[in-house]
Length: 381
Ligand code: G
Ligand code: G
Ligand code: MN
Image (cartoon, rainbow, N blue to C red):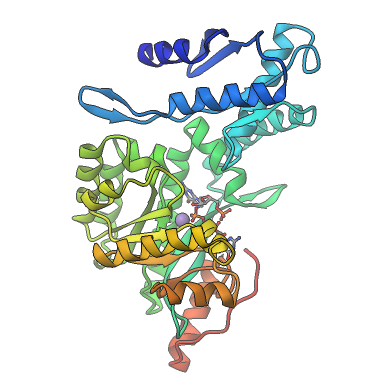
């Protein structure tokens, strides 16, 4: 924390900074003249914060979120200004692609939503209101199902089915992702057991967020669960993002190896959007690269995206990594990824995420008909 404080002190320049408790800081930037300058100032602080820094020979990476409020529009006194900047900061945490957020009056409601989600999540853990929907991954060109990705859903008693982007960020921020992750993992094993009883053995991939992966008990807990429910080799895949493996390379490699010893495979999710260092990829014991949807969408229009896509494909071939493209929605996108030599895909064009029982009927039908081309189920998750 002292190192971070020093770093921030330098980064804020003419502004004043003080620690607000926990991992929050308040910056008073009286020299900033308007929104453009404020955005630039905030982006610069984030980028300073994201430079790797070294502790005991370990490179560490931080991320940060900034909320901005203006005097006098967003508050007449310091309490109001801080409260509104705080609301904006929480909003930036919920946004996947923005780390800087300006206060807007409608956010006051959002901030209270964040808090109410948190308290509802605590109840949801007690009542195990979580389940997985599963999205098939297909092999091109015959569309046979080669696996499924487990995607969390929250069966909220009054809000109905809540998608993960509306509660996973809150769960991560509050640390509740740890107990939720445990519950989800057990629920997934129950689903797999059910499928197994009906003769369905399909590889399942589960998303593990940074907070879960770096938790010291992560491996132990996984081992405990797998001891009670041994799975065939390669039946379980863990999806992590690039952010995770840049924290501490040695430790990450050791952890990944430990997981792999149990026949679990490793995928890098959203590949290409984080700090992908080619050198890391070479050193990590990974099996699969999941190409982020943004490249596939971009590649049909932007030759630069296509070039990146081709480079990723050649990297995968060279390192013998399996490659899968996410978020395929159109025939053209399917053609494009096949053209670059990617033969596994996931996306609404093939199947949407669906409840465990639907997966069972989908795969059951495939088996019965001995056909590898099930009709896409158009049910929304
Ligand atoms: O399904 P959807 O696109 O809304 O998912 C949003 C994000 O939530 C995705 O990035 C996905 O990886 C993440 N996510 C979905 N399910 C889980 C889960 O069970 N655990 C964690 N940690 N993240 C999940
Ligand atoms: O970050 P992660 O790759 O785990 O996120 C997977 C998310 O992508 C899931 O929430 C899933 O619902 C979503 N998804 C899957 N297929 C498609 C698709 O074809 N289009 C879009 N927009 N999203 C998709
Ligand atoms: Mn994923």
